[in-house]
Length: 322
Image (tube, rainbow, N blue to C red; front, side, top):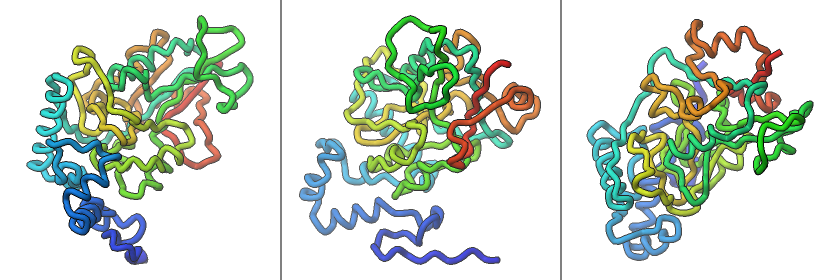
């Protein structure tokens, strides 16, 4: 049976109905260029200033950069060169931004042993540093919840504890992006700035995101972050090895999230949070490889996922030693 043809929404946005694919993508570039033509360049720039912090060296075309999935190699190289130059100008730091594609035959999964997690939050610290988060906010893609033993009610977990750990009557549950099979955050994005890659990682094109925060509201795991201000990072603390879809310094006014450190893992390395864990509670690997450690855990441990009833089908698993 042929797929039902999608009709345009009627708003002249350039789409061909929901889930129309790349050819029918909501075209922010054309929409905003149309607005610019109507208002005039000066009026358009002034109208957009609260969202973009326009400056004299920022052109309309830079803001209206083509979506990542529509860039050819030459265009992407130009974009990366521009971003590296902006980092030199804004942070006085030399960085290398790469575009690492998913590997064939790889689907990433993560598992966490709650029996031996001690709540030290070294994983969150490593994430903070690896992913070039704003230093003043102390931001991280990982929240560690202090939970009462015998309870799995995340809403009553304490992410702000400030006392020696571990406590005898508590267990600790780190929560980050679950890299869902059915990610609700992707479904609600009005401009398709976020999507799921072939290796299971949900990514964001930071230069396409409009900062509406719909994805943040849709995520049941509170795994999305919003850049309220321009990230401030001392030059000497910037991680220079960066990925376009992962840990490059994000602009103000856009959403961001955990990417399983794809700038590392797609090159055969481990996520920074796993390497920082002092107890070995974290397990990462290829779900398609029957000999991988993650598959051994899934085959031999009693694993569970968070909020299974929602049907998001996470690729992040939890288990207890029995």
